[in-house]
Length: 261
Ligand code: HH2
Image (cartoon, rainbow, N blue to C red; front, side, top):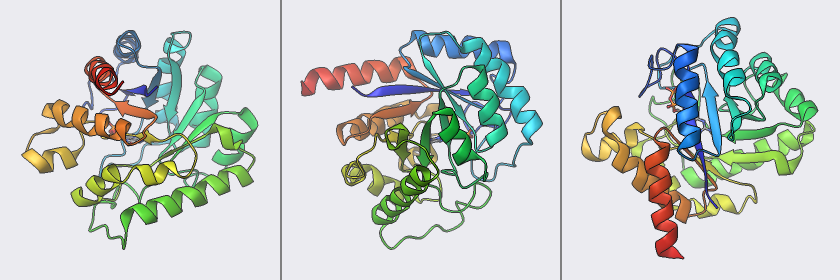
């Protein structure tokens, strides 16, 4: 069954919901709502990775995410921390997280792989070309699916070499991370090729700008495009869908599953 990872952004500047849940109580209430709506996983993040975003210091990121994870631990959803810093991941794991969602695929902090290995965390390894500040400046690939697949295979191997159990690794093509609209479409259309890597696939299309490029919609009006792309991704083999709108996505998936049998 496809699982839903609900997004809890404790940031002032996330591209679609920045500032809405910066207060820990508001973030905890939002996370509880997503859990009640059927999110199997809650992904708590304290640093925006939108194109052009400025990096956040370790202290500030800890201050944002740890109280929220503590407040959500014990709910029926598993908790994931969206960070590329080992110190943040360590405290998040102590506070009740069990998944580390690292958009740098363990390349951002030399301590991250060892920490995840030692703590037995599940790790999401995501593809990104370049870094958030510059990743959307003219990204190019000979074949985007082949490039992402080779990258994810290499990062999976690196994680295992660092002691992370292979069965604890999930992979993610990184929709919108150093990709044009056409690259994102091709990745979604050929997602099945990434399933050949043999690990669960996480896909995050939620509210992203490739949807806006199709119909001109702003970030807060991309629910239809999020649902269409996520259902298609699930049909192509995605195991986990990272979304902001859990209730609507849960219903869409239930209907898609009922139709397909
Ligand atoms: N997308 C975003 C952040 N983290 N993690 C994974 N594994 N996959 C994704 O596609 C992904 C991710 C961007 O979305 P959001 O968190 O809403 O925005 P921001 O980075 O501006 O906070």
